[in-house]
Length: 100
Image 1 (cartoon, rainbow, N blue to C red):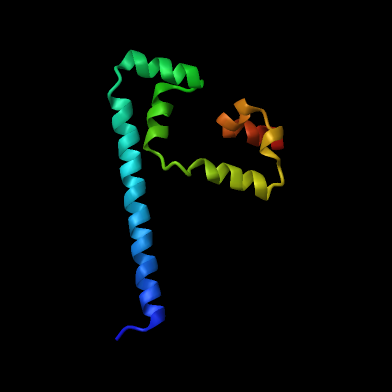
Image 2 (image 1 turned 135 degrees about the horizontal axis):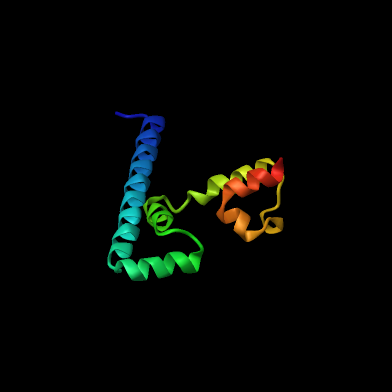
């Protein structure tokens, strides 16, 4: 009979697998949603966001928590994201230039 620790480990493993599977389907849904639009509409959406259409497609393929990495780095550097220009947040390379 499995021990409580083994059961907890299996439960945690299954929870992580389910979370991973959900993230795959969420990304697929975002890509499929974007694919419903024609190229002109996608270009307008990208323009409204201030990014290229290639960047918009790349963002649709990313995990919804991808931005957490940037905010984690800002926190590690003790930089308040509210005090950073929004355009800089959209282009992390510009943030690096501001830090130097």
